[in-house]
Length: 341
Image 1: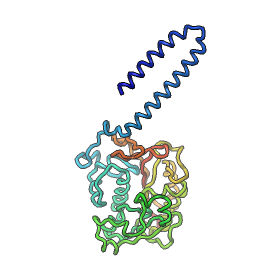
Image 2: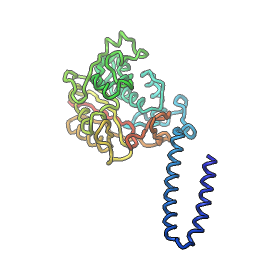
Image 3: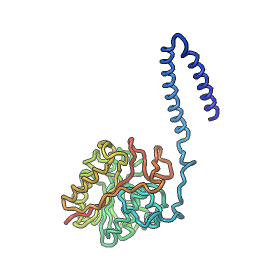
Image 4: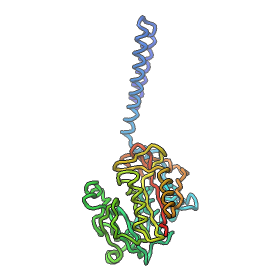
């Protein structure tokens, strides 16, 4: 580092000396042009040096990010999961640790943990899990929710994409796909014999929901419907999950990708889309006009320093509440919908 600074210092001194001598010569105009080009080159070199520094030290958070301990830090406020998007304060609430225990997880500052805890928390709050209740999970992969709900006595149907789709998308390799009931089972939460009595698994295309999947008290999905091709395809799935699979009064809880950078520019089609606030608000109104109740969509304020941290590829930071995704800052957003009569 010192050598680099010394070389730059000498280069600046030499450049300044040459400039002073040449500016008074007979070719001052052409020299001025050359100097301008040299300055532009120097600026580009500085930008390259900056990028190289980031590449060589991709984890500056190791030096300058203080992360309060999840087990010892006092709660930041009394409210818990009152917002529709990820908030650092939720992770420091004692209820989050209790939910992680019910999910068989060691608490982490990760938005995926927030999503699972969010679904479990609000399903319990709304009284749609437990003995005598039926729950339907979409694209469950190997998440802990099917086992957690079954441990409460809920009858669970855990679905995932057909096996060929799981292979094609690479979800099998990343352990994000379940091809059978055993892969959805978490033995720390419920024993296998009990789980088999309460849970079943089947393939389900989210763009063409099996018409036999009806009469459920709860349906849920965690960051899945943004992968259905475009903005409208994902929203259509949510609408159909409410109207085709739920019993009257049943609850749908779905999470997806949320664009924090813009309420205009976004990714509207492709392998992953990013939903804007205006997409969520317009969709909520669309469902209300169809006779359903949608809980208010509230974006969490950036109230803690960790709310300002944006994880970047390869996503190895110990804080993953927001991330850089497809050129935008993204987080998770949740919808809670009660089917109308």
